[in-house]
Image 1: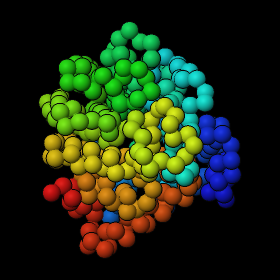
Image 2: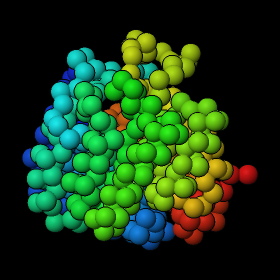
Image 3: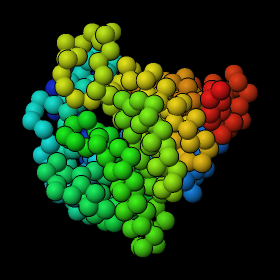
Length: 348
């Protein structure tokens, strides 16, 4: 029934369908049963946490931390809310979300639309904190000091998050990706790690990067991250590239492209970053995952955890259970007994 409802929502405009989905999930959350216990082989122990399975919901679906517990009930191993900015922000003008059904892809130029840190904080404070929920933070578009925005978001939200993801890679906030440059990134991560130490927070810090990076940029990011002492990288955000193979009528819309066309480039960046950072930090692979084989490829490329979003919009929440089942089939084929056995197996 739930997947049938998801199919029906696809007849609505993309952003209307998304907002309706969030409202329905919020309304029915108290009545949803808990997800069945996962096969122990799917468990992952990283970031000082035990993840019951490696499949997470990427940021962008639950921007305002309205439904993390509802999404956990669909079988996700973890949920990432956000992106949240210090002040409420309308985002870019509509239309700003476009389906490319023929390509199993989406283009968005949402622009960090959200109700701000304080609104989300009130919801997070009421949570009973069952299940792993990360929070993705960003900067307001018109902020005179973007690093201060990240510091505020981290300080307010870290006590109520299982990890914080620092989003410097959205293509929809002008100039934001400049924070991936070596000097700016050093400043940002130094501020956040000092703030964490001063407040005695134990919350892991992860950096979310773009897929549109050259070798020098990857070298710089890897070195800064390793020197900073943060715990992980999320690889990757949406791409500004437009493959010639795209068929959708909206293919030339500006914004970030996600979904199946992002799978290959994001997985290649994942491999490249694993080569550069080794096993010293945790990698989360995201971009184009729609099957157990896709998730397994991300893991073999170096990811300990995997996230998805676009495929969920096309296939409904039953996708999560299918991916976990297919992932176990990949394990059986390759005689793996746990996720850790496969992490980085394709690095060579």
